[in-house]
Length: 116
Image (cartoon, rainbow, N blue to C red; front, side, top):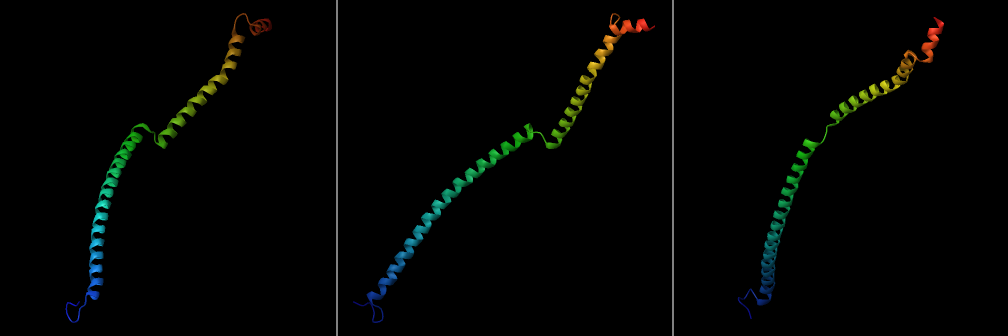
């Protein structure tokens, strides 16, 4: 069977298969594009939630965490106070000895009285 003297059914079959393949590829691409679009929307909402959580964390850090320079200042003040306390504690034995020597009934007071 021939449609025209130049075209036969055997020549039209590959063209028909090619057209059906192109139509199938178009529908497949369209379905994949829809699926990809839905997946992208889902990822977009996850990114939005992550950004919101990151903003919340940043506000928490800003409110509740100390900067390094502030921590250094506190450390310096603590070291100064500890040095003052250490100095005071080292002075206690000498003060006790001085008080014992100055007490009226102490041995050192009697010796001083005996020397005079």
